[in-house]
Amino acid sequence: MNVSLEAIGQGDQKSTVTVTEQFGKPTSLASVTSVKGYSTVSLDVKPLDKQAGIEVGETIVMKIQALSKGTAPSTAVKLKMVVSPELEIVNISGPAKFHEYGNTIEFDEISALPTANSADFELKLKAIAPGDARFKVSAESNEMKSSISKEEAILILQ
Image (tube, rainbow, N blue to C red; front, side, top):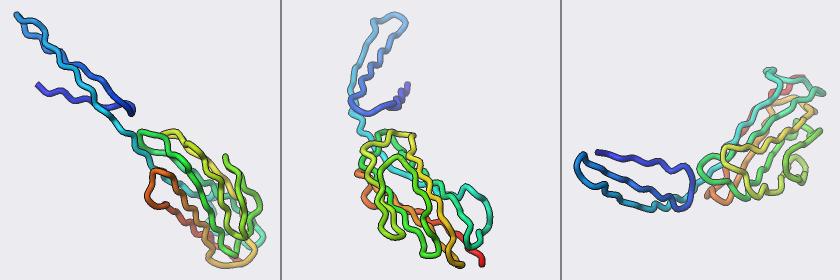
């Protein structure tokens, strides 16, 4: 006989196994397993417009999704976005306050991001010079040893 149990939450998980034979008394064994939670954050970055490129003067909206994965909430989640000089920031939206330092945007931390939930951000950018521009996003949380990042290329045509 094999018995496998899968934790559905963190903390002390109690289980009892009872075995009964045809002519005997049931025998039970109780146990407690301590389950610790883990979490990480993943990033999804994509333009809402699927064009291969944009022209100088046109705008593009970038959608950023920070997703909490694991068995416990991600805590102190912070995002930072960097925009190439060929792009100008027109509008910023998201679930946290932000601070703009030239072409860098830093969002205040999200204290807790529940498992399987996301924090969604949008940036509207305007092309101000031709070139091969970049849009970079990085995220960090208390549970991750180092930040993660994603980069998207934006081709700006004359």
